Amino acid sequence: MSEPLSGLEPDDLDGHTIEELSDYLDAGRSPADASIDASPGCQIALAALARLRSLSGSILDAEASGEPVPDESWISGIVQNIGREARAGRSIPLSHPSPSASLALTEGSVRGLIRAAGEEAGGLVVGRCRLDGDVATPGAPVAIQVEVSAYGDESIPAAAARLRTAISEALGRHTELVVTAIDITVQDIHTVTGDGSEGAS
Amino acid sequence: MRLVVESRTRPDLSAADDRILAGRAADGDIPAFEVLVRRYGRLMRVYARRVLGSNADVDDVVQDAFIQAWQHLPSLDDLGSVKSWLMRIVARKSFDRLRARREHDDIDDHERPSPEAQSPQAIVEADSLEHALSLALAALPVEQARCWVLREVAGYSYLDIGRELDIPSSTVRGIIARARKNLIREMEGWR
Image (cartoon, rainbow over all chains, first blue to last red; front, side):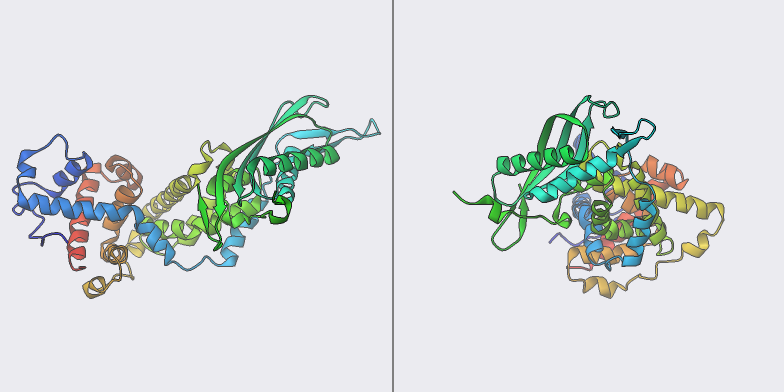
């Protein structure tokens, strides 16, 4: 524990103020100030300021853990509000036998297909997806970029191969996109230990 | 060779990391966004409460912040930093609310000493250093707690705090120095 604090006013701090000492701490005690470094009162106050600072980073997280869980009606208020704005993205045409009718998918729905393919494949969670290419032009080459996290202890290449197959099948079944590549980037790997707890690596 | 198909794990979204969830939400996946709301809703609430200085408006401010976050997520470059990004949004929403209160001149209704203020005895008996600081913070005048949190927790400069709260940065410096002194004195009781 630190030494008892005599006071925090200039009289106790050899003429220095808490503002100055805070700035000195902010600057990493550099350049060194002999009149601060040689003052026992300042040293005690600096130690107290440093202790306060070391707690400040975690204080809100600590308070949040004691906060009641948000109620469901508050959460659904948010979800209902955002649900009005779908992220449709670009329009992806589908051919149709009648020349006077047009049919199209949204880019957002294609991303949804890719996420669902990820759930089917297992072992990986699909994050952001990008469709690179001119999806609005039938027959134009399109490359799919997918970010994933890996879970479990199975081989990542095996899970990625399964995901690639699942995406390719889903897009082949539901779209007419000419997919030239499916690039999967593993963002991070979570290992599941025996007791069911998780660690990120 | 092990049959991987049998041991295939089907991870739950609530275990996914921020970057993945933010990426899905940016692409329009509402369930992923809901996981972020559950993960950071409480943190955003305590932060908003400290900046606003009371419970009034906290739920609305955090709700507005999440709705704005949803709208702007597709343009967030570093999806992995979604937590600090959400914190910045809720701070901005809180500043807007404080500004509106100033314009309506009803500061007094909101700036009463916080009802959660604790006796020094409670601080002495706090079960952890964080808890003691939390009690000490609650005992501070609202303006001191607000400025201290913005500076020390959120990392705002004196200048930015002054700009957001419409007070000179020299005044902000003085307020934060008083907050530090008070917090240090209050914390001295906790040993």
